[in-house]
Image (cartoon, rainbow, N blue to C red; front, side, top):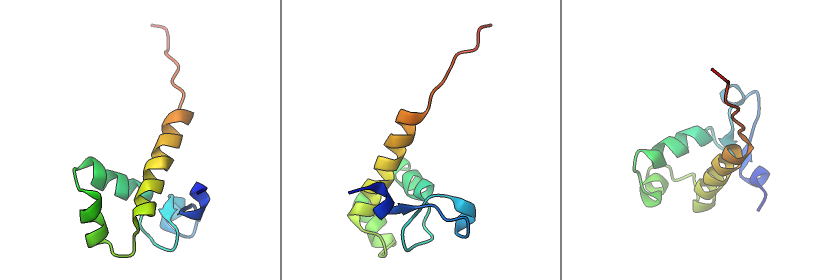
Length: 76
């Protein structure tokens, strides 16, 4: 499933941050919850508007960004 079916960017919603389609829940927020140790089931229980596919889309989005990020060392 393409990320665009789950993740959208709209300048009118949360100042253009990526959000889960049809919500005002930012991708970064879901990633923070996961990083803090919340389980998928806890997140789904606390945010009933989300589906498992939304959480997986957030992880896929983070993976995409990690692959796209390029770091170039600066010589001392």
